[in-house]
Each structure stands twice: as C-alpha cells, then as structure tokens.
Image (cartoon, rainbow, N blue to C red; front, side):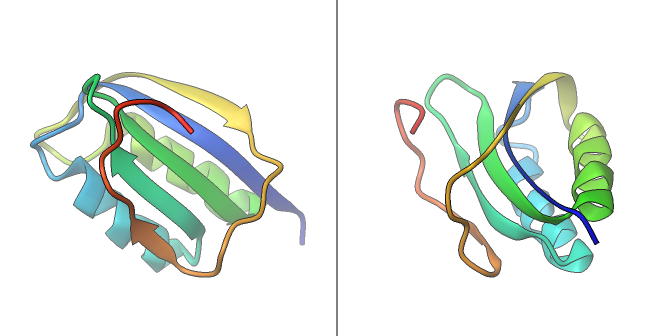
Length: 97
C-alpha cells in the first residue's frame, strides 16, 4: 500500500473550536501518524503520515473540520521528514517549523 506524508496549514476559524482536538481524534481513528498544533497567527499546522488513502480522507476531513470551524483553505505540501508513530498535539508556536 502506498504511503504519503504531508505538511498542512489550515486557515480560517480553526482555533477555539476544537479543531486541534478533533484532528487528533480523527487521525488516530484513521491510523495516521504525525502531530498538530496551533500557531500564533490563528492557523493550525499539522504533519500527517500513513497510507495514502487514509491521508486523503484526513485531508478531506481537515477541509471541513468540526462543526464550529470555518475552514477557508488548506495549504498542503509533501513532507519528507521523519514522523514518529502515533498522533499527538504539539505546543503552540509563533512561527512555522
């Protein structure tokens, strides 16, 4: 089965609406590894890795988010770094990295 890893930035009303916590739950349910965190600019940043079909399904979910979210757009780039097993929340950061 093909694997895929990508770096995602969600723009819109994605903080304070359980987007990050819901992302963790959805990723764990799909068996995706990676992490998610809030950024000080109001976006949510994530790295997703796993079977390509599961990552695609996760990206579709992230484009909608939980009920209270209003996702305006996702910026998606392929990720070529290492990704640990499991899916976790990381600390909020002021910049990307």
